[in-house]
Length: 279
Image (cartoon, rainbow, N blue to C red; front, side, top):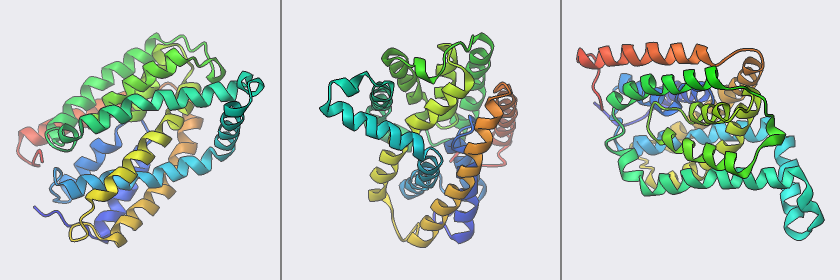
């Protein structure tokens, strides 16, 4: 088993990251599987850093896709900081809710980093998380009344969704799966829950990508493969965002539940048979 990542590995991992970052199937789980199949040491700190850093490509895709919304929210937030009248703007409050909802996962990510990059980087963890979180998503889809839109977001709801997002630090849970489920369980409609999931991803994943730069070992992951993986993840993620928003507007998220269950069971069987190594 090797740790070095070449251009071919980077291309494959960039595609996997872009496809899975915003779909509720767990990008970290799929990247861990892909790295294992490519013969990489998945609990190597440099491999973990590579996994996190190429997520930045997906975040840039979010910036560009939602650029008008982001500019509007940032402008409203900035005006509200200096004008009491501007604080009545719903966009000002929404921007603060996104910031507040992002705080829990930042704190948890820093405090639990040794656990996240160590013992949890096991494919057994991914297999179990695939299956168990599928039940949460199924319940969320079935119980949600979907009566609230994005404009009805409250601080309490944002904090709850932000706390649930912390579950995604476990590979296999899925950050989007966690946040969309939390939104649905509070009766927000699928489009609102999905859009909020995207907005919460921006500060969380941007911070994580920058933080992990210090762990890059160029003898394991060169800057060329790192840049390639990030660019590929950007292109693929942009297409995935557009598709997912159209999909959830008309369909339930249960299709992802069945996929996750099948993937979790198959992965468990492969691990039990010794076909692939847990790490």
